[in-house]
Length: 135
Image 1 (cartoon, helix red, strand yellow):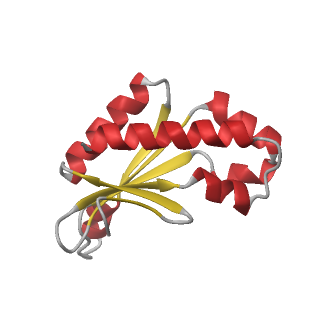
Image 2 (cartoon, rainbow, N blue to C red):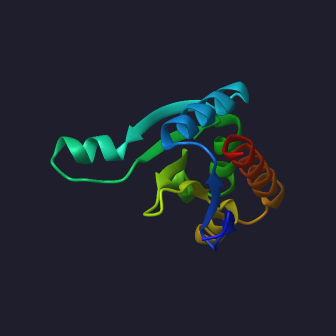
Image 3 (tube, rainbow, N blue to C red):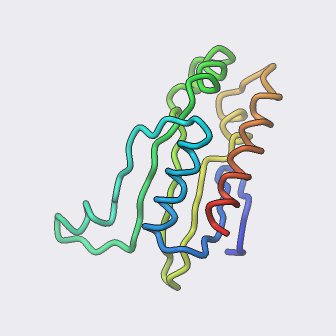
């Protein structure tokens, strides 16, 4: 995987920091920008608690009702993919990555019509936040 990648469904950015530090920085930046942090899930810690080894892997669940509610007005089924999630994970080569759902994929998945500007703004914001956190 390159230092940042855009797949059809996921945007992924290489982080210069540990999983823990990337999580901390992402939470701080999101809160500064007015997002709500709903939960942080330490998958690797939970796996370890049941005797399973899993490289550092965490998910942050976050959102902004001012944005998410507007998306739900466009197409109610998108609510199943909200709030947003960010996956911070370490690969087999000890590279840390930050991955988020590609908003354009969610738009296609739910066949959302007439909300292109909202999706563009979300893509721009998630990309900028991800780059800021991972540099």
